[in-house]
Length: 346
Image (cartoon, rainbow, N blue to C red; front, side):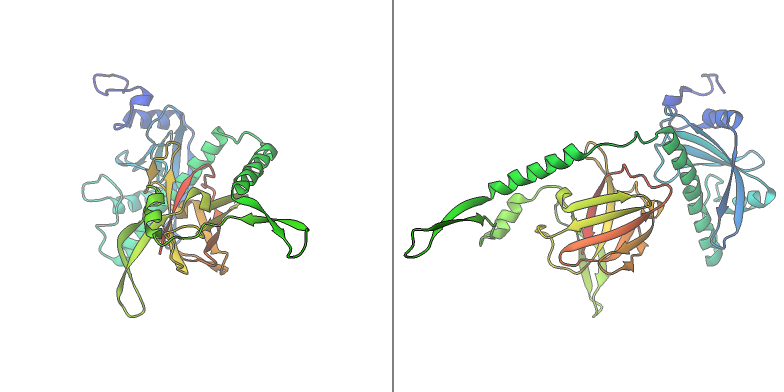
């Protein structure tokens, strides 16, 4: 395994396609952990998970291996394809081994439900395959938190003062003092006049001028039906950073979006919310975040009703007084350091 004539690029930080040497090292040198994975019918299947967390690993993959030693696939764990880990998952007994065999595709290269004809059995298989990522992802997330602990508390008093001071300066730019003199009187009184921004007749031109690429309006290809059965185009726009406030608390997160000054909002009362990850360079990732992996319950604070999640979208969120307010209860794999762009679909 360590002979470069057979395996090229054996240095850990160079391994991005052939993970065999990593799997063998993980299996030989790491203590296994027993994990239980449920299917849709709540039937539990037990596996031994060997895991190596190493910051030099560039691509996180898990080998799903049958008891006879045959590897089925290099599985990507959702949201952790680039996490620094390597893992091997092996069935504990013949029960799990036979179940894995029934999920193999025709070429024996991955777990799949597409070849299953019975709808109930297919749905059960889908749930099990998804739960593999869910359970293993929780375990990896816990290890990552242990290896990268939060560095204590931070005194934010100077930050709050700076924000308040900045707000006062910005507000003072828009106010001026006006003197009023009463009729037939020499007495004078000072009042404060606040400048307001009134839409001009050529408001459309101004709106186009003030657009930026972040908030550009886009039509989605998906359609919905109104009460008469007619198709309506959905419109998606990004909430500006200054319109969004997030409050992260133990076990939950409060999300507040104020659309009062968003020119693309047209007084709709219902919307859907889509989350895209954005990194430190501003690059956007549309398919790297899965809502159900980070939030197990979402409540619309305007209506106190629970929101459903479909196709990785928070559905039927109310807009009250041009404001969206959500309470999101977080899972164990929730990562509070992630930054998002919030898209509103109306």
